[in-house]
Length: 328
Image 1 (cartoon, rainbow, N blue to C red):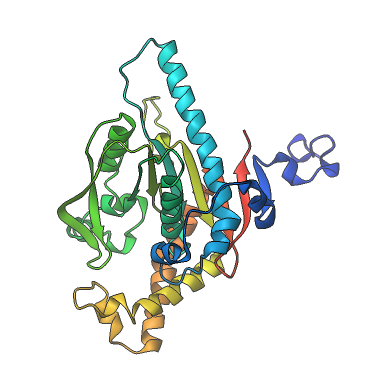
Image 2: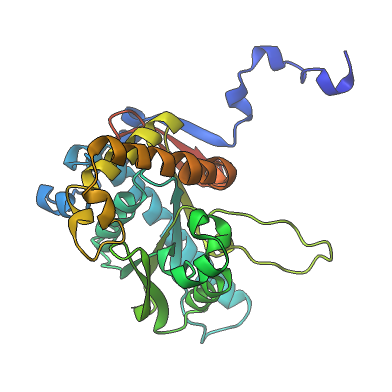
């Protein structure tokens, strides 16, 4: 047996979990960590913020999101304390407080948007009433005109389809505490960036930044120069996870339901799919999954999962079954 293949001493007595950088919890174990965190949402409010075909309800909020809200509260408080201590260390008294940035990543159709909106509602209702803003990376996609010119329409959502410079400038300004930072707006109806339309982010206490590739890394520069990546600006990151087969089925079923709703709008980019037969529409959905979304998941999204601070893994009912929290 070569040195490379020899097990570590005592490895046969230890499970691989001993070497994991994460604490692992079932949803039932995780739910106990909510302690006395109050439920501040109503059933109607949860129904308003959840995405199409997402079954999240008050029970799921109690099981998963109250504990997560409590954990994030502890992280925000610790971050604020460290900020004050560092300013004293540097003898700096006029430095603007920087927002606590939470990144949320995961595949299409896995429930990132619902998670982001639920957290925004819960965090904004803490006793301190923090200002909580939510921005998605969709607005930082290159406009369709550029994607068509560069032959990237079939790779929309892949890392190269984003204006990374604009994205990094936005997050850098947020972390610098600058006022009235603009984020481009995106329309899921027209499937394009809205020209000259922006969401203004004015020094929130917490910013939730949601997108499929927000945990993406990049090749290290050979010359050692500083090359920032999006997650450099995060204080805490969450990855929404599920089996590939489940995400596949959720994506296709969502596509089929959108044919009966949003796609029927004459202004919808996907309006043409509302009028074709069900079998033909399902074949198109399968093709979009196989040729675009599955490739992006395998090549770019799933490999970023180990970079997250917390992983919420969902089961077949679209509800969280396990939680993995990175060890300190």
